[in-house]
Length: 176
Picture 1 (cartoon, one colour):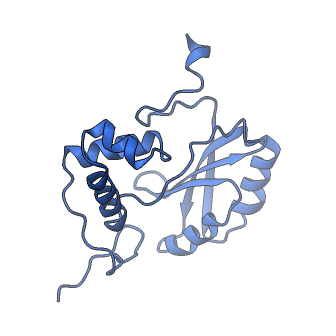
Picture 2 (cartoon, one colour):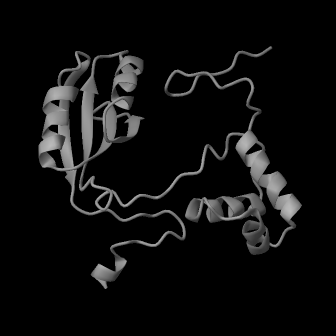
């Protein structure tokens, strides 16, 4: 039996999850609909892609079982949710410490996205905090206290535009 390759994070694929099958145009259309509205009913999805409800149900289940759909979430306006300050933080870390650092970053309050990257820094972290004071404390007290973190750089987000398909941009009216 061939050995499974590890992903970028060093994790091996779950042997219980079958390899993803190729997606056709209907699968991609279903994914677009569910990205825009994770609460869309099976009937609504079926009607919009012109297939039966049974077929839509089977396809959605297959996409979940194959790991293509990892979950259903809400699109959150962070400012309205009390997390009005967002920042990307770049980190340089000790070589071969990714797994340790990733585990600690996952526990940070407000951490929204963590990526191991190549280039001038090693990790890109997106955080949402209530205000600048909380962001400062997160960087100076929490992040810089991690022994494997060699340096950080904080990039404050002034404005965001959501590029997800069919999702309304909450700031579009203000720009028009």
